[in-house]
Length: 84
Image (tube, rainbow, N blue to C red):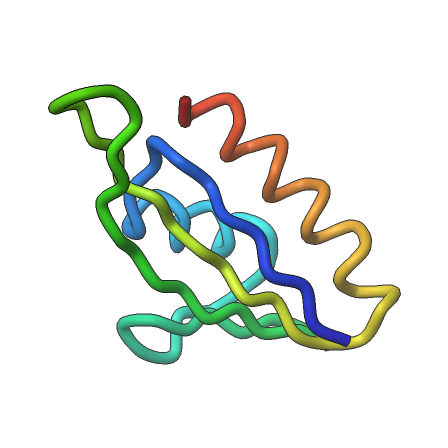
């Protein structure tokens, strides 16, 4: 199963930290893997209003459906508290 979600206002470093707190281990600069799942991260700057831009982190979650259900929800809650 694959789910891709984008989060604005958080850094890739913080996203990796959250994934590690949720049981993952960083295996390279853009990937974190956990039991039954992996997450690949990309970033880009997006314009939100005039000259204001935010970092948008896109996380491509892949793995077993049961593992992803709780992981994506928990990650989203963490990211929403930090980001905009």
